[in-house]
Image (cartoon, rainbow, N blue to C red; front, side, top):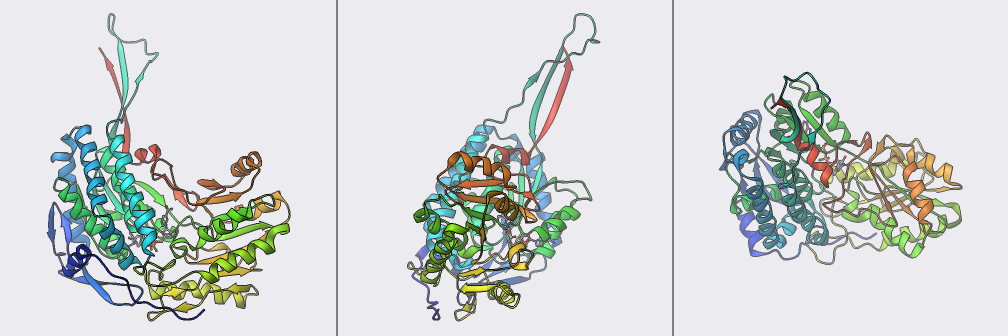
Length: 504
Ligand code: NAD
C-alpha cells in the first residue's frame, strides 16, 4: 500500500471557535476552573501529531472537589429534589441541543480520536443522542412493587404493608476510554441521570474534547451545578483517585480488562458498586449456507469499522472450509481497497489509530505473528506522517494459542481460521478469555439461534455485526466484565432496591 495523504478536510466555524480556546479546564460544581496544580497536558490530532489543545491535568485534589460537589448536589442540591418529569425533560433537552450541534461534535471526535467522519456523524453521535432520548423516558418509570407477606405476628387489628422502592445509588464515578468517547460517555451519563444520581466524569487522556463540549452543551440545556462534574487527566492520577475515593458510591467503567482489575481492587476500600465494560476478542462465524454477498462485507466491516478500535470488533473470523478461500479472498480484497486518510477528509473510510504509539503496538502484533509461523495475507504496516495509520491486515494460519488470536489487538487486524464442523467451531469461538460479542452468518435461522446459545458472549448478532440501539443491553461475560450498558438493564447499575415493611 502506498503512503497516504494526511491533509484534513475543512472544519466548521463552531469547531474552529471551540479549538480557539486552546486551553480547556475542569468543570467543578458548575464552574470551569484550572486544575489545582495548574498543570495541563497536550491533546493531538493523531493523523498529523499536531497539538490541537491543552487540557487541564486533574489530580486527587480536583477529584475531591468534584466528588464533594456531586455529593452536595445529590444530598442537598437541586437534583435529588427534582421530579422525575423534570429530569426527563432535561435529558430530552440535552439530546436536542446535541442534535443542533451534531456536525461540530462529529468533527471534534474525528480530530481528537482520528475516526473517519462518517463513523461519528452517522453512527456514534446519533447513538449518543439516542441514549439521552431513551433514558429520558426511563426517568419517569422507576417503579417498585407491593409485596404480599405471610407475617402473622402483627398486633390485633393491624395489617402488614410491604413495598419496594428503587433509589439512586448516589455519587457515580464514570471512567471512559478513547475509542468512541462521546457515545460511551452518553451510555454512562444518561441512565445515571435518569436514575437520579450525580456524577464525576473522567474521560480518556487521549480524547477529552467531546466530553468538554458535551458538558458545555449540557449546561446550556439547564444542567444544575454539581450534577455532572468533569475531571480530565491521566488514568493513574485522576482515574485512580476517583476509583479509590471513599465518598463515591459507584464506579461505572469502560476500558481494558487490565484497568478493570485495578478499578475492582481500588473499589474495595468502601465496597463501592462497580460495573465493568471491558475488552473483547469477538468471533465472527460464517456457516456454509451463508449469503456470502452479505457475509463477506459484513465480516470486513465488523473488524475494519473505526479502524478495529471497537470493543465488539469481530477480530477472529471462522469460516467453513468449503467457503474459506472465497471468504478470505473477499475480505482481503476489501481490506486492500479501503481508503485511508485524515478522519476529516470526507473520502476517508479508515482514519489513523488513536496515536502513533498504539499504531506501533498493533503493527507489532502482525509482525510477531509472522515470526510465529502465521501468513500475513495483507496489511499490518504503519503509515502516514505521524506513523499512526495501520493498513488493514488479514492474518491466516496463526496458532490458536498465539497472542494475535488470544489477545485484544484493538486495531484493523483480522485473524482467519477454517472449521470443518459445528462442534469444532464452537470450541474455537469459545476458546478465549473474553466473552463480549459474536456474529453468526447463516441462512438457517433455527440452527443460528441454537448456535447463539452455545457461544459464551454477552451479545450475539445473526446476519449482522455491531447493531447497536439504546434499547439493547450490551456487556460482557467472562473477562469482558459484568453489568450492562444500554437498555432497561442499565438502570440497575444506578439504582438500589429498598424494602419497606410497615405495620399499619
Ligand atoms: P484503558 O483501560 O487504558 O483506559 C480506560 C479509562 O481508564 C481511561 O479514561 C483511562 O484514563 C482510565 N484509567 C487508566 N488507568 C486507570 C486506573 N489505574 N484507575 C482508574 N482509571 C484508569 O482503556 P483504553 O485503552 O482507553 O480503551 C480501550 C479498551 O476499552 C479496550 O480494551 C476496549 O475493548 C475497551 N472497551 C470496552 C467497551 C465495552 O463496552 N465493553 C467499549 C469500548 C471500549
